[in-house]
Length: 361
Ligand SMILES: *Cc1c(COP(=O)(O)O)cnc(C)c1O
Image 1 (cartoon, rainbow, N blue to C red):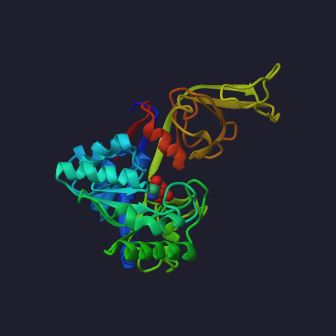
Image 2 (cartoon, rainbow, N blue to C red):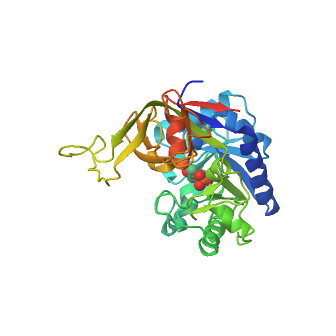
Image 3 (cartoon, rainbow, N blue to C red):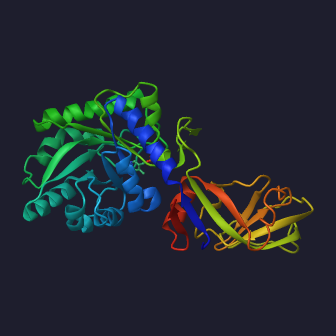
């Protein structure tokens, strides 16, 4: 095996997908599996398909292109607001896209109409997270915006997103507001807008509590299915597997060194000035994984007593003085390997680093 490596337990992810699909299904909600956490890996998309998800969604067109080329039959949704320069490719690769700029929607309409195809658009609504989406004051003009479409775009509904730019949490109140925006638009446009889509994982809690408005019928989920975590509500999701993903790295050096450097301390490579606590001489292991591959604040050592000290671009330093080396003899010596559980940012970094292999087993 080459290190570093991120290992995905296929069965655990599949079990999570099935559990989430069942939970949402009981409330009449279709799940679209978000693949961006693993850089649009077609193997993940295949697990989502088996798990009963209704489609795959990603923020990157390139990821959806990969999935499309893998021959997976599920419909594809582009979640990031499209760039004008992407529209031609979007019209070929995606069945649905989230959009918030009338000009772009009209351009997409023209492109699709010229190609003789129709693509669905969900109008993104900003209910307060202040990232993408129509602001309510724009809605009265909506009928004008979309009255002259040429049949290349079908406005199929509305969508919103939580906990991204500002950490806004979903609530009965803001979800009902989303439904009311759909109703206003529907009245203005004079045709049905059947889809109301919400994301991401934090919306599961509202479903669990039975507070999701019954009109909401689509959810886009990534973190919960892959990691069993809900960062926005700061909780472990009790009914999901939380150890489906593991990052492994190899030890390249292990030595006793002081815990405080000797000499004058300046800025380190990543621009902060570190502080040190004198813990005396410590046993430190150096691993062949760094900030190019993971986010060091967002990984958790799986070996008892191991503490992360710091990392630079290519190295991770861990304190193994108190590590339990009786059970895993030699694990902390050069050639040994150590395992970590990634949280969302570390998973994303590992999945997009060309230096980390991703293995499904
Ligand atoms: C990433 C993303 C999601 C999935 O979010 P999770 O909290 O990871 O489940 C949903 N919707 C949009 C628009 C996203 O960008």
